[in-house]
Amino acid sequence: MNIFIVEDDIDLQNIYEFLLITNGFQVIGKADNGEEAITKYRNFIEKPDIILMDHRMPIKNGIKATKEIIMMNKNAKILFASADLKVKKQALLAGAKYFLTKPFSCKQLIQKINLFFIKF
Image 1: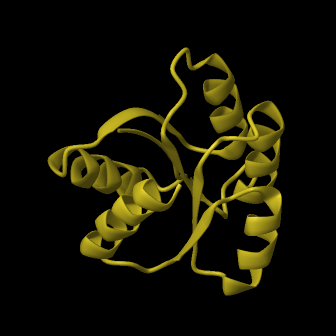
Image 2 (image 1 turned 135 degrees about the vertical axis):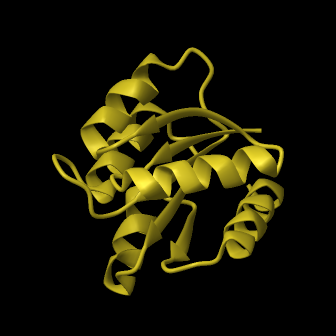
């Protein structure tokens, strides 16, 4: 199972990557902002099983990036993560399949990703 991490906080990117790899997932790419995520997604030969998408990022936020990725591939599976519960509805309407509220523990992230794979 491969995952694409979209997160502007480099420390969080690295934590997510370490956590995912040590739990048997493959990280096939990382992006620092929504625009970079769209470009990388477009260029993936093998699309990720899950995109872990942050909300607040420079250049293009997670909602806009989610919409554009879904326009490219309506079957893209996006796990949206934000501390701002006000964007939950927007994220789901944009095409995210699941919303994860920040902050979350490492255990919660792995549990949600495993549930995400089962459900979607």
